[in-house]
Length: 147
Image 1 (tube, one colour):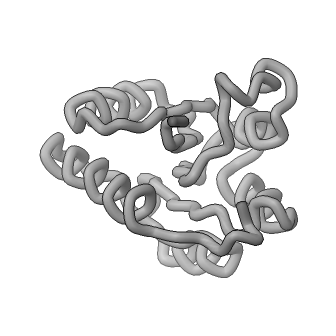
Image 2: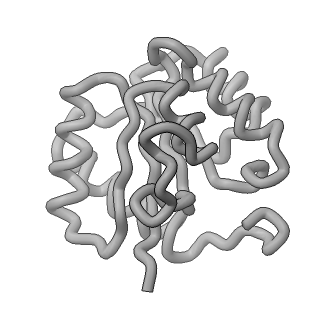
């Protein structure tokens, strides 16, 4: 059986480390793939460059993206995703430090399925990881035409 996969686009190394630790503590039977910016996220989704081996870099069931990233930001990546038939239904959760209401509005208008401000407490991050998995990976369903 292939493990379900979550792709996380996050440029802040400290946040990556915190997320990795939270997923490790959760002991979920899933694969987590990290990329450092929207450009790498696009390459991952296209299966190009270092992401060309789909066995090692499977299509994710969930994408979690930051907004403020170098090269291609989260909005650019979200726009790219939603312009393609093969990814138009892929669930995308924006996980960001932004408290700007305009970012929330823009993310939803561009096709984000959820907008979450990064928690500051370890227990809140642990709960977030469990909730992301439970809702978006375990229970959520997408139409067959989008897979």
